[in-house]
Image 1 (cartoon, rainbow, N blue to C red):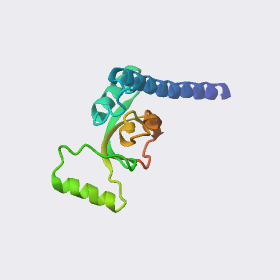
Image 2: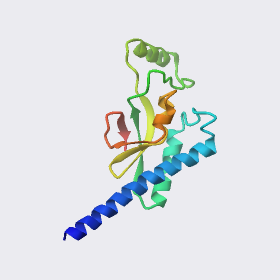
Image 3: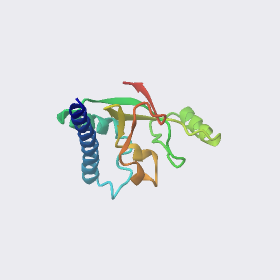
Image 4: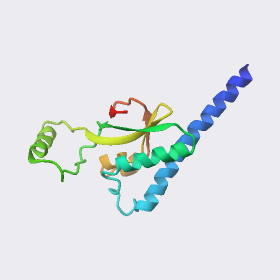
Length: 150
């Protein structure tokens, strides 16, 4: 019986490694295609599209994954959202919140699979720190993410 348990643990460990490897490869491909080295902001506003593509890639590899819409709660102080479609009241409210030390949550999309959050566009919320946020892997329901639609 112990051999069977160890065999199952090994398979589960390999699947987790495969999952993380697929996500990292996906991000590497995106960077190459979108010239991330030349423009570190190239994924700004692309989270919906990119997360959908990541779900497709994971499903092609036999991994049950789904896209989640919600809020990213931990953008850096230097982050400023694209306000082109905002009305003036929303813009004023945003800057008022910043003035009082509150960094507003950002609308965002990410992928969940195997009880984890996989975010390959979190770098858009961390200007100057993009390298540290290329591939974010966290437990599902992490405090930095608030799901609004699963």
